[in-house]
Each structure stands twice: as C-alpha cells, then as structure tokens.
Length: 145
Image (cartoon, rainbow, N blue to C red):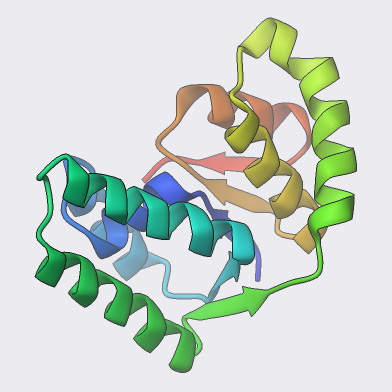
C-alpha cells in the first residue's frame, strides 16, 4: 500500500458531502487498496454518528455507508492494519513538537500522519490544508483529490 487516506477523505468516499464527487473521482483513478486502522474505524464511526446528530445523514444512510466500508474490507479495497498505537503516539509527539507551532495542526491530524508514516505508505490523501503541509514536511507525498 502506498497511499494513506485520512478520515475526512474516507467520510467523503462513503457518505455524501461537499467533497464526495472529488473523493469518488480520485478513488476511480486510484483503485489500489488503502489501509484502515482502528483509529480510522473509530473516527469514521464517530463522524457518521455526528452527521446523524446534526441531521446531515439518516440512520439508513449511515448503515449503508458502514456496509460499504465492510464490503470494501472483504473485497480487499481496504486493508485492516493494527498494533500501531504506541509507536504512533510517540512519533506524533515528535511531529507535534516540531511542526504544530508553525503549521497549527490538530492532534487527530498529527495522529493520522504518524500512522501513515509508520505503516510505510508514501502518499497521503487529504482535504485538510494543514495536514497537507505536515505530510510534505515529514517526507510523504501529499495528495488532494
């Protein structure tokens, strides 16, 4: 796997929002498997639940989105990766210390970048401009769909 997608990208891919068309187009052009960490699962599940709370999605839409995630896992389009957390947290602290003062990254964004680097991906797909900058500074290729 060479590309890591952050949860904002996965949300746009599996649910409908302002970036969904771009996410879908990028995915069509880039069908290689993407890693799916426990962090992704938690953050995506929470983002979907928050969209329900905010009445942007229905319960049926959330169930359909999650079923697509599960189907893509079964089909090998998403590859479940585990056992990273200690190393992710240690590396994320370093990135936060060295880069957040000049970029202004949020903790969750730094955690995604650290996970991507530890998994060994070379590309990082995001709609977040600060995360895009951090990715480039730690040696990954930032991709915006």
